Length: 268
Image 1 (cartoon, helix red, strand yellow):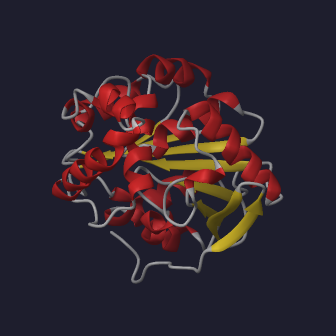
Image 2 (cartoon, one colour):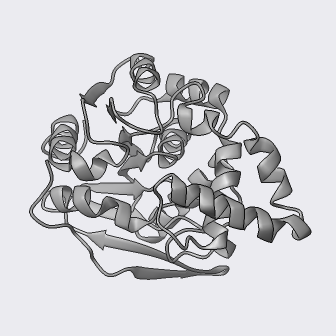
Image 3 (cartoon, helix red, strand yellow):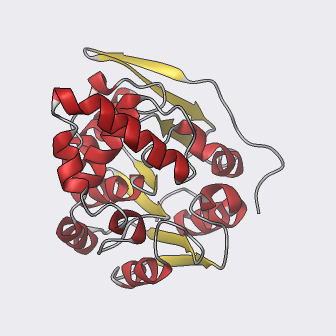
């Protein structure tokens, strides 16, 4: 289920030495930082945002290279560097305690945050996120490591980007993706390490929600179930249908699970 209408607030700008990042900031109460997948943007949260913003302050970030945040703001594709960047951005917004919510490739970033910055994290919500072994979306790209390297070769960058754009479109992503979003997506996927995922799971202490669907075309349901079972304590929300963007199709159910997990004050 989803709300009657989505939440589409105007993007705000936070200026820094490398340029301005784009974000939205709606609602009052305990803070939830929303991290989209790749490619993606703040608009990936328009339905779940609508379901949460009456009770929480939801800060959605256009991560570097996506939406309206230029890659120059923070070009490193590594999860540790990007997690540090998120903590710094939230600090600039006056936020030092927050729950973190990640969809798809935003999930490993949320997991890195919860594992590496426990003093800041009040909860973690992973939605359609990669698990502890390669899922079908990655298995379809057996040469991903090589592609990431080749995209850094100037003469190959443009033709490879054009080919990858066609691949993204065939997979159902919007047409006309910006080149930086395509290339950074490949670099982020390349940076995903499943051994690091296992290490991070063991370090998470925040209340956790793992949500997935059985008909996700990118993330295998058995991988998501296995992933959820490795947490010492986590709430699971498995749906028979809803696809990969379940933060849209199952936004009401996910928002209810988040409210139950965080409690009346937004913290355990």
